[in-house]
Amino acid sequence: MRLSLTLAFLTLAAAPAAAQAPDWAHAQRVDVTLANFSYAPATIRLKAGQPVVLHLVNSASGGHDFTAVQFFDAAAIRPQDRNKVEEGEVELAGHESADIALVPKAGRYPLKCSHSFHKMFGMSGEIVVQ
Image (cartoon, rainbow, N blue to C red; front, side):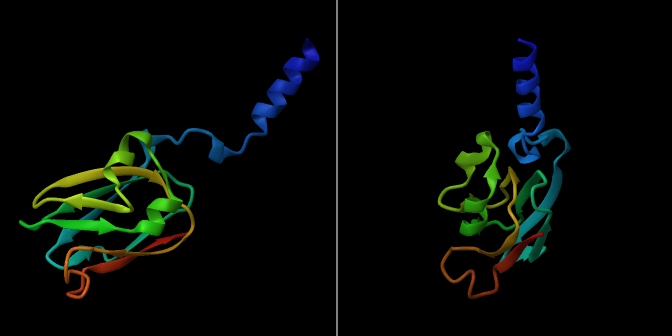
C-alpha cells in the first residue's frame, strides 16, 4: 500500500506544468483595438505557455474580424471561449468586444481582417509568441 501511494505521488509530481490547468484568474490581459483598416498594436507580443486574455475591441461602426488561423490552431483556448473562435477567426460587429483566454504556443503568426479589401487597406499584423 505504501509503495502504491509513493508511486502515485511521484507520478503526479512529475507531471509537466503544461498539463496542469491554467490559472485564468492571473492571466495577462492584452488589449487589441480593431479600427478602420488597422489593429493597435499591429504586432502583438506574448509569452509562450503563459495564460493570456485577448481583449478585442472594435472601435469602428462597421464590422471587422481578428483572423489568425495558425495562432488559434496552435493555442490552447479556454473551453468556454472556443465558440467565439470560428475557423481561426473572431468576428466583431461595430463597437463590439470579446475576450478570448488562451495559452499561446511559440511562433510567429500572421494576423488579418478577412473582410473584403480590409487587409489590402492595411488591416494586418503579426502575433509573436516567444
